[in-house]
Length: 333
Ligand code: UDP
Ligand code: MG
Image 1 (cartoon, helix red, strand yellow):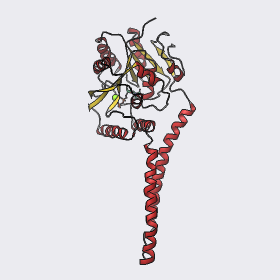
Image 2: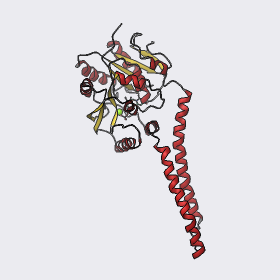
Image 3: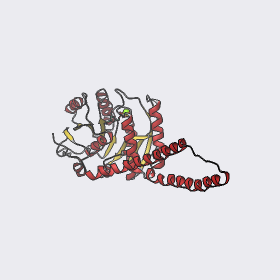
Image 4: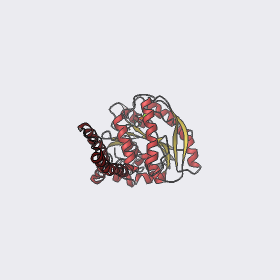
């Protein structure tokens, strides 16, 4: 029986064939320099390229490399969740597979962890090689989330972070289906600190986050940690109600005293109708977002389905919490 590694590095993989070798080279160089034991848990999130083959080859050469192979694409946050379920280190690091997060920063994270912090998150000081649209939406997104959520989620911080085993266990015990991991890690508490870094360009390939996935991600973040969209309706209803109450006597007065046909045209009615119904539909949509998530929870489906795993021994199984969450027990080949 092997003992648990000191560090677990988790990398979600979706069509990253061009990055896997370099990712392994850089992570193993960094982790070896700690002089302590480590594992690299790759979660294949339904890649259609050679990613699985490449990871399996690495795993044969270096048994510290492990693979959790999903039955299909379940999304980035779910892949990271599955990775965390399958880790056994005293500390776990989440890192993107495209090398936008420099593995060398892990050493600084480890230092802080040893100094007594349970969560060390990486703060993007600058982002390289990303278009203005991504930069602008990311900037707005982080600020919106910061304002409207109940937990304080640090600005410009992605999932690149180190977490103590206690934090990982707490996350593994959270069963929600629509997961916003950086919010969840803030929610659990503990002593947290940020380290700054410059976000690099993608090493190879394209972003796997098209606009549709970005919107979904933002919705998960908002609905998961804020009731603001539900509460803001009350203000809009107050303002509209007040306008209506004021409008009635004013219009009546103008008509009776001055004989003035105020706002009589059909066009005005149509515009107002469109405006008000677009407000209402928008808030209905927001409510729907919450309702759909309640439905997700009540169905109680597993978070993901594992097709197979590579490199896990029976002894080094994931904690019990994850087995309940995953439909096929890890560690079976
Ligand atoms: N990813 C994933 N499943 C997905 C989309 C992305 O596992 O459905 C992985 C991807 O392989 C990468 C990480 O999540 O390791 C971050 O994705 P990406 O670099 O495309 O996002 P961006 O940095 O552009 O926001
Ligand atoms: Mg990326």
